[in-house]
Image (cartoon, rainbow, N blue to C red; front, side, top):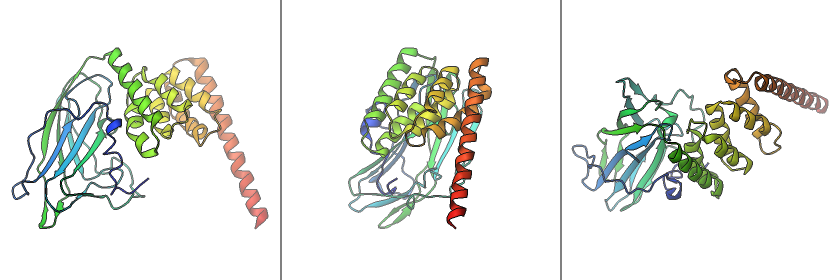
Length: 303
């Protein structure tokens, strides 16, 4: 993956679910911060329906005549401090590393914003929070690292935005899935495919299965997200797609599909399908062990 100095996911205008035509939020400027620098956290859309991907936009405008530097962190975005209050008043907080040991850091987590330029990054919030019920959600967001300028540094203030989730809308979900799948499939780079594939993989609804299956069959560069999405849905239709993927001889799709099936087999409702999955996972695991043993023997013979 390219260095974070190139805002890979951030500038994918074609990958966004909806354009940036949302009303401009109030400027978030801490005391002592330059008036020419604006920092926003805001939902891409403030009204959604159940099971849609929830997208938060992080945006910075640099109106100075000198570049500024942001520190957003590595892949886990540990400098985005996010706290969500659910419709039932439950308060959830995003852990700095999202429960991951961040062993491999891509770049130094810093992004340079040129004079007069903007930095925009869409964040799929479902990877950190569950949005499982209808109602109003409140999100408090803050960049915990300092923004560096030629004249010093400052920290932006926290912001709060609200999101209303209405009842599930089948027609809307189909349109969203179709658009995201097409964007991921037509992407010409891995970076360009990441956001739409990730957003699609968090549509935790049976409707998403056929679109995730198409993304897999097209040998998309974001196939891993499609496999994880099928595992999240976890119904019988998703299991059948993963079973067929085990016969694929492309990249490591068969291996990843096996792992997904192994984790989700207890959730399969159909007894015959569940048994077929159990046997397929066992056969695949045995083949993997045999291949490993053969490689070890070949290595020892060579030594």
